[in-house]
Image 1 (cartoon, rainbow, N blue to C red):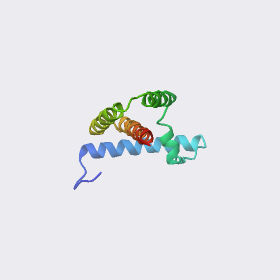
Image 2: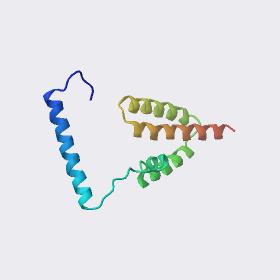
Image 3: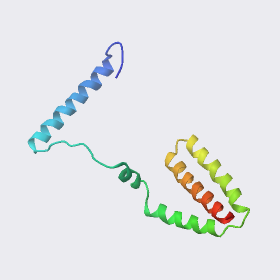
Image 4: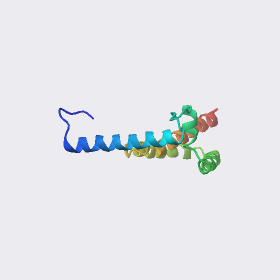
Length: 115
């Protein structure tokens, strides 16, 4: 916390934090617990965001893209991009990331169809 002076509410919050910290330290000491920070690779954290349902949906989306005619991908690209930007504006970052991945896959598929 940053301030020119410590207000009553700040003092109460700091006192409560210290009380809880003392209680936690006493509990840890009594039970032989040594606190340790979480050690995870960023990939492990990101992988936790994806679920089997999301993977299933991804497969369905890929199949849907594969069955599109020539004009449909352009419309779908515009729709996905608009939806992704809207999700980002609404701070729905996981949804925006999923839509970004869909958009990328659709662009890749459209590029492959042109070859």
